[in-house]
Length: 190
Image (cartoon, rainbow, N blue to C red; front, side, top):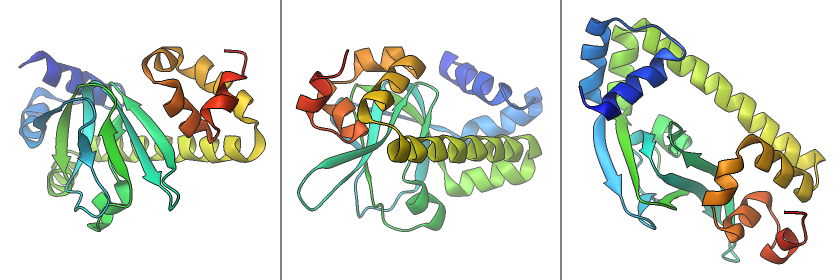
């Protein structure tokens, strides 16, 4: 078993237990994918057939408004899951972009494969339930922070939660994530 698949198995086993037989069933459903910096994983309007688990690299998911402004929903780094989940789950065209900030490697999992492994391996169904719940909690926290905190407070919270992310992401992207201009961000106590 290559090291990347071992990482994926450990990721699952942070939340659920798997037997070797279950893992042998699950593993072939994940396909390797690599992209270079600035390449798109997902573009608006396209069909989204996979969700992705990041082995190595850094991505951003975002929307672009009618004025051309980028609104970053998520930074996704190693051991994060990323996709346009509305498009993936409901088999609709994508409404967001996901592209690489760094050269990146992923495992791709199709909706059909996810349904199969969830049906055959209840522990995996439980894993995805727990991950979904955690995602909803994170989304709620993000929305509440946008409604109740200043951009500077959000920056310091991000810096505290993911200090290594701040070092990897260009300041203009941090500003887009916080919903401020690059000039405003530069006035924060960085």
